[in-house]
Image (cartoon, rainbow over all chains, first blue to last red; front, top):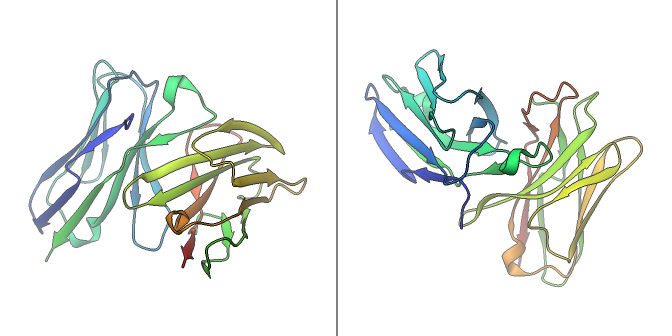
Length: 112
Length: 113
């Protein structure tokens, strides 16, 4: 059983469209992180959300942490081809800072 | 460039063999994490070392072992390799400031034939 469930697993859209991807869990997390991974590279951190209900914006990307701290979403406005990649959410299970568990990710393809 | 260095980048070997993957964390970071990434399982946490000591273990097989040396570089040893061990193996380091962020290397792609 995956602790962090991400949906959709795959998403293919046209440049300029908006999209939202989700990260859900039945467990409470002290924080959640979002990473983006491009082919041939390791994941790179985009944002960390800590407070329930928190909303963070990074240019065209908007991240939200659920009020109960069990879920998070990533919304991209006017997607660009450069947004293509694997989006991963991650969190410390049980509040442990010694390990970070990842969802399986959403593979986003933005077509020109 | 994350500052985390992994070698080798690619490795092809046969079943039953043993390989060693090497990782140098970012300068100043004491933590090293190892992850395995496969298409069906995603990114799976294997093990975490801090300043030479093991701090947490995840889904690491008994055929796999790791250590962190006094100079803080780490090695992941994979033995009695099976076809299913073919995957990307990532090393990551964590800043001393403990922001929670992990900096990943580019990974070592292991193919077992």
